[in-house]
Image: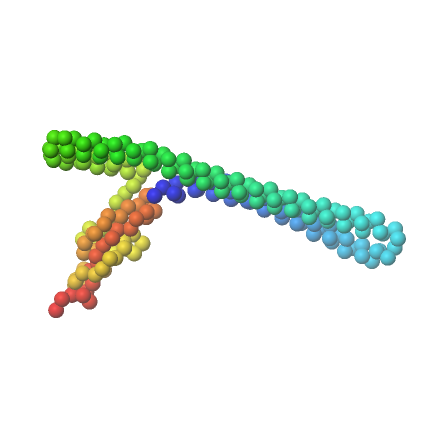
Length: 207
């Protein structure tokens, strides 16, 4: 659910590097075009023996520019591969941090179940589970995880809600949510899991 947290920084650096290489390629292309224009301007003198060294020099410059373009493209391809590797490593680091944060929650579940089995005290189990839920909610809040509004009467939004079925409704409540089946969540406006709901449908109204 946090796979997009670290993309912007890497993508901005890649775009910046891409722009720099693109500018260099344009400069080299313009330089090549200028050399070609100069070479075209001397075509009338190619039959002259004295013009042969000049033609060979222009060809050498053009070959050199082509080699520079090839090297520049290779450098950019290598940079792109390194950037992709860096993003992959960042995702792995994020995954490790996420699991590390969730391990204490799992530990508390084990402790609560262990105490309940030893004492046969389900009140203590309930209190333990409530404490774990609070711990998870605090963790979600730190990462700006929000629930998607999907209570009865909420307008159905296909971008945030997943309709599992229809419920009998009226013309007044058609297109609104009748029941939330499973809560949905979003981070900074990005939906990581849509709410699963039933939607009122006037056509399904019972006779």
